[in-house]
Image 1 (cartoon, rainbow, N blue to C red):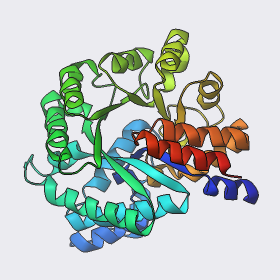
Image 2 (image 1 turned 90 degrees about the horizontal axis):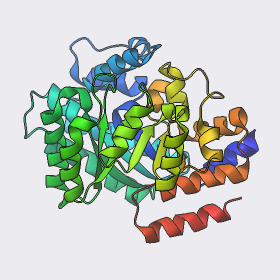
Image 3 (image 1 turned 180 degrees about the vertical axis):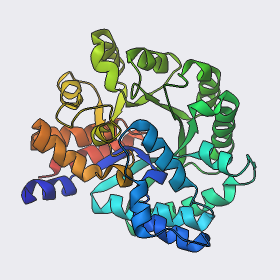
Length: 338
């Protein structure tokens, strides 16, 4: 076991579905509370927040954590600790969701609130690039059930800031699919694409395959979760034909109750079908499994060999938004990893 774990950590890989706020550990949450609260929460209270049994409980816990991110320095601390942990796992590149829609909501929709926060995130990113050799791209994530105009604000902010900050590469659409699908955001996605942004979307996590078709129909280039695609053979063929990057999050799906076990996750079926599947941790502090552990579980629970784990790492680079030359360089290093 130690040998395969060492191999996984040596393997250069990208994480493509990772929420910054979901990397904040209970210890860091308690530290942030010490900074801001008259009666700070204890570590035990912080740990209790991370105990949930379904998707709704997860959403409530996620909101409670985001409330503790009050200052740019808080975001910088959270980002830096996330980046340190990524580097420890052998992650060489990550494309990280920032919940810009939630930030606006907590700050009374103040248009001037975000730039100082983003400056803190950029300080951490540049430090990680310099000290850890880790590259980070940002994805501005909107919340689908906060209404279309709220999402448009997030996407417009990404487009406006992208010229100055090329680390902003994409927009995302998260939130509760059960309350709102993808079709209402068709025009906003088109505007983001015209501004040079890449398009990602959460689809088929708590909904059926029709939600994935809908996400594809509005131009989504990469899809998160896609659990229910397994119910529709035509959809699986479409995903393969289009080479759509699939951001799979097995432990996340188990912890939110939408998949019974890691062994039952469609990861293996999708991989064997030739889909462009990638492994990701989603919200590792909430779900108790980081990217290295997801690779280990793929090995122990679904029988992925070293060569197949190498293929998953290569998929993570191919599905990334890195330039072709950078992708080629990392793919060469992956092929040489023993």
